[in-house]
Image (cartoon, rainbow, N blue to C red):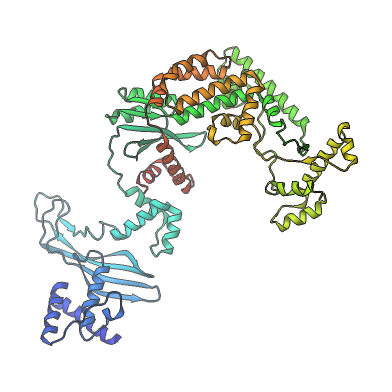
Length: 613
């Protein structure tokens, strides 16, 4: 059967070469011969071997039909031969152009005079595990247009391959999609596994060669910054908030760059931004007719920073609130002794910071700028700004992970067994291992030592000696909750009432009662939050007056800055626009940037961002 197929295929190829017949003419000749011989072509069965091998002349037609579906541009090319190399495995197809009158690529005049012929070699999409190579026989022709500067040209195959390309258009399209999704290095690794090997530089060239979508001027523009390198280099992202599409990236976050772009794209009616002064100035200069809207999330974030400043000033009150005992339902309980800390080292560090804070404020009162203070004291500008944000010395925030350990998921079980009378550390360790604990024994031993010390300290009190004689030791409890730092306290105030637990409400009430300054700060913050969330613009002016008359410097400065951009704040409370979409696009941009290991230039990053699916 195999010899029969090869012999018939050779006859077809010879007939095509001798007579110059195209595919349709060849099929018509064989159809007439079969009808004359009284042969009826069998009905093809899709996807089965009898479609290719059937009675007498039947397999030839169906094989040609199947092959024409696999070839690129069957209307412009004609198959004249093939080579199969199982060792590679590779299929090499030889095709020739069957265009009647190719057009000159410069003047588009049809050409009739042949100059010569030559071969182009290109890669095509693989057939399963087989690599496909194309040998394209094309012609060089004379252009007879006397006004055309091109005298000799090579015929083009626009549906098959681009000029000077070594890959077909459909292969390049697949590789471009792969490069857009994965980038250079990751795309190159995957391309080898799926039978379309390409170097990472090739994939990057495909990205850079892909045209950008047409630039359309949005009516509502979202503006925010993103980091090339955090705390060093930043850019600007522009998003169409109505159509929910990406507009472009800007290489920096300067007011002049944004103003120039807005000038070149007139027609913007609304600019939604964060509270950056550069973006406010750029929007005012580039689109003076546009209404500026401050983002509500950034307003809440600024409020959290103000609250954090106030709570940092009153860190001692926060510690007292955190250490206050919770209601134990009338049962006498004690807490484990906290881990030992080197207080001497911390005291020395605090003294150094206090001396530095005093130096900064002394130079600031003498009229020194922040840059001059930083250069004189040998510290960073951010450190100077942090000191100047507090008119009283701020105590350093503790670590947010203080008290956390690998024992946390098993502490309720340990306390249950301990209060039940099991105080043997080795036995507890074996029970924990049976429950999945993978930590070390010394970690558990240190915790049980703290439990034992807590009970011993409570027993030494005179009021509890009678209970000790009766072997009725007080119960231990270890409530699992986050340390109350200035940041967690600020977000506790901002949290919605329905999302607070009973413990959160109790802690918030203690904060109010801890100090009059904290009471005022929490009241001002809750009034501002209610104004933002209920969209009540009539409350803005009374709140600004109340904050500016406050005894808290942080709230006075916050109210002054809000008053400077009164129109944008009022629009934020009134209009529905926000930069939520912009933040989502920034997350996508971060993923693309990190996927390329932070080494992509601005042009490549902009193209991947704009062309991302």
